[in-house]
Image (cartoon, rainbow, N blue to C red; front, side, top):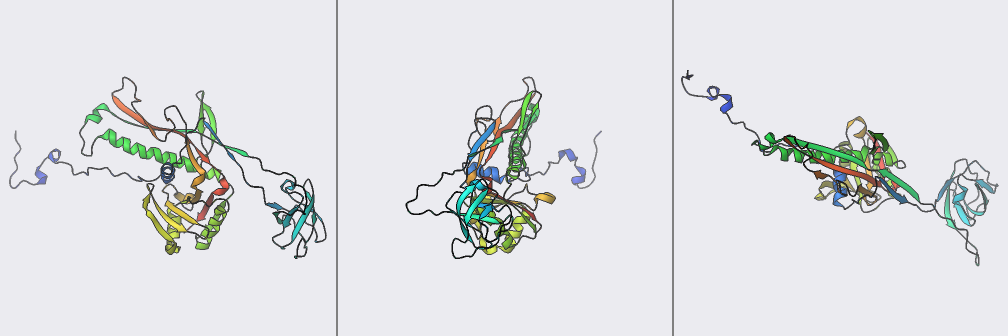
Length: 383
């Protein structure tokens, strides 16, 4: 029997199923740009295929120029014991920064230096235990023979490749269904690509190396930046001031300082810098290499600043990483399904009889983090 409606028909009189849903044509993704480090490495051509699941590189540095006194000596004593006698050769001029005294090395026996005190105008003074001692370099007599050879040994560094997979899929029925916002499989592909790059980014920062055997096969994880940086760690211990930031920059620029210094910052650190350094900040051409960057002119050189959405929470919201991008390389494994590329899309991985379509993004990569002294970590920023 028909249902009748008396009077003017309104929306309450119409069956809900007849009303077309008002929905945007686009599903808006949260955090679409949460992987600035990965983006910049890819844009700056800092991707180099790896040839082995263990990625190795060699590092070296200049001859050591700083030592420590091992025990105190009086101003009239000519035998100085240091922590590292191998750093010194006959003819070297030593310098004691605290007292200003220079001395000349006349004999090296293990960790004991025989020295001529007060080599110059500054008088000899007591040297205390753990006193920093600088090696200024050699001074040799006229007509002398060449001095003893000294060199540093190269050090091998390594990291592991890690397999990161992000699958997605829909049933064939779902793929064939006409939706307001477009094909669901294509949408899942776009969303999964972002999730995959976010996974890579998080491992590049927070990853820790380990290997295990699971079901008879190797399982590897890679070292991330936080595990690599051991030397240059600076705790702000509160409010970040301009002088505090300069002190932080100083330790990184001591060994780094290329034209590609990048500081990826938590929102808290970015806000602090914006508050005290507006006159030193400028936008770097809007979006550079796919990432919004600002340029900050520190007392030691120019730094590009990037806000990083992964630096959040009680601990990491006070973090910033100052990186020499000339010394960072992403190393995807050559061959196999990743083929030496980042985020390879592998298609049709569903079972042969499965009524669905399944793809995945796959990366097998490692991080080559050269000369960790060229980078620095800022922690403990509260505002």
